Length: 169
Image: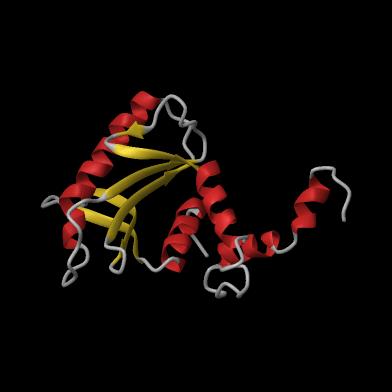
């Protein structure tokens, strides 16, 4: 499983939840060579009629630098995403998310025109669904290696209790 861990986690989670996922999509081919931008994750769920553009990052950049970088990515997404799923009727609204491993959403709730999502909140969502009984009752397919590992942790709650100094039951 080569590549960026956080991007892979996001792709697995969306695909597992019924989205068609495109990863590391180069958009805006330039005449002189190269591309305008790379979109990390674009996910479309035709049943829910949801279209998401997610830019995961473990950066520790300033919010000023993030604003500039994510505005460029999200503007490119708005311009090019409608062409990525040819033949499919896409919703007109694209939910754009900047997923940060190192950030707080207390001061900044948006950046570059997209919503700020912390890794903590994203993981809470994943773990909540993996422990709710629906998804925890059947094995996650082995093609989702990260989610399978998380499911294992969820099915062995004493692992975390022991780690945190609590005595096993």
